[in-house]
Image (tube, rainbow, N blue to C red; front, side):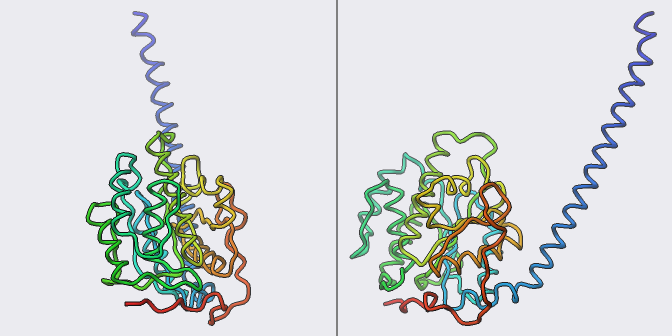
Length: 309
């Protein structure tokens, strides 16, 4: 009798609580839709003004887009489009595979580097990933005042790494011209704390970004906001003071304003500067100071020597 007497009030209370939760959920969904509409409108405005914002900023520059494992290919394509809009030329998209950063691949990577090392390329004394980064960077990039690696040798390097599924190169000609700048597109940070394998991958990506910078006019590490939280590449770069002082970072590259920031940061890198951009932890400004608009490249932005071979 007691149970029967309590069932009614208890069930009524549960129904009322459930109805309240459903109402709250629908209100939150409505808020999310409104916020997303605001974001989409802002992005549409930035895209409509892209020529005024970035037109001519990368005239004479060639840009290599590098995707970290797990990076969003759509974001990479949007960055490539922004580079085109700025007057730059994308030489290709280099997809880094997880195996490149796997400690079990160390001997394979070391043997591969030794077998395809182009003449005149000096290797760092760090890790196997750093040495792989040095060889790939030498093949695909050129620093100011330096001669690019012979295109046939460059193709041999990339092909050798691709054959063992360490990298892939898309949207490039058979022997793409050496790029003058690079964008490393980061993946979102994992939901769980980094394990040993994840830590090794982040450390490898930081070493590789250093090699990209050493063999070009500059590098920008760019990713979504989730890349600027604990365990994300952008966050770890901003915590690595030695690299952070040289390499620019953007933490909202999946949005139009972030893609503008990437272009302006590439221009800044070519001019010898660096910075942290976006709205995430550690960002110093939404975008770099664009300075005076110009359709002509600064002296540092003149085309690199034409590829040999």
